[in-house]
Length: 136
Image (tube, rainbow, N blue to C red):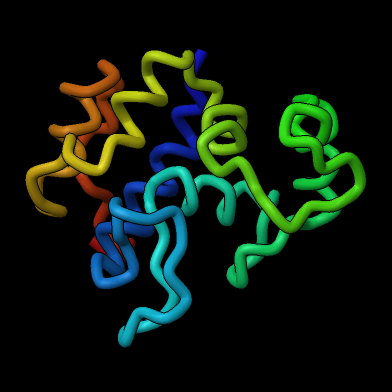
């Protein structure tokens, strides 16, 4: 079952700072507006498996090994190459088909329609954006 709480955090992060979202690359630390991430990248950052520099944390290394990705990529103890698709799928608890649709760079129309696009792509209804002002 999809990790809806984490997906909700990812969408809220993108809505709050759309200039830091780039679905064309998991991470771009050369972007003029700051480091950008795709949905899989933000899921990895917000879940704590990578830091904002794109480096695996201890939690990320454990997930990496648990998924067998070190052996899959022939890395064993080297974590220079990160399988963002696999880690993103893991932390969001998506099926392979859902991950294919959600991580596709061409599946989104605009930040303002991100919630609708997520619902159309993987059937998860995140509801309306939360309001930042809790005094109302």
